[in-house]
Image 1 (cartoon, rainbow, N blue to C red):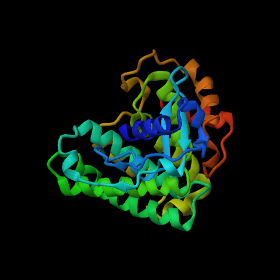
Image 2: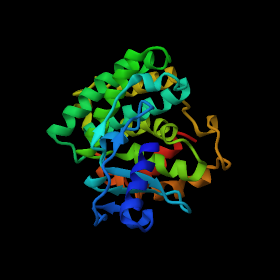
Image 3: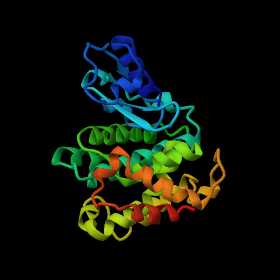
Length: 274
């Protein structure tokens, strides 16, 4: 997002070098400028986090560059700034926020504090996603902004999981928007996880119907279920699946999925969207 870019600029302006130098945590040795985060989508949650997620120029791998000094000192959540946000962008960023809430609630780094943020975020996002798709519904968009912010706080205090791990290679390979890639994978990852952590999901929504609920929200947002439905930069070929699976396993968020995955698990997940 633009907020990730702002954090990235802050790294380089105050500490010099290139973004790869800050890949990881606490790599900035000098003070950074105070900054204000003002989201205009609903929402990446970047305004709540100390990480700048920057795609590496050649590989398109997402570099997580984290430092508490990069975190915004002040955050302004103003729904009037989303008034011109198109419906499709609201749908895409909104489903990403929903994925943040769900994945952070069940990830292996979950804790009481992060789960308070996650569960409240889920309640807000689940309730207001549909009405927030209408430009003039500033109340719903305000609730989505707050929900996305809380989901961002949840990530800051925990982590994500396999839906995001699987999404990043799709963005790198096919040029998919991040929210679209996450939306493709989220129902299948939940179904995979639910075999071992059904009770955990049931704390925020009836576990037997949460996948159906996510699919319903995707339908409302007119989001795709298969890669062939997306506008991709490269031709879609099932022979890509093994490479995608290996790339997903190497993603930072993969290790925090509540149910451990092997390469064959990633392969099966990707088969669901081809």
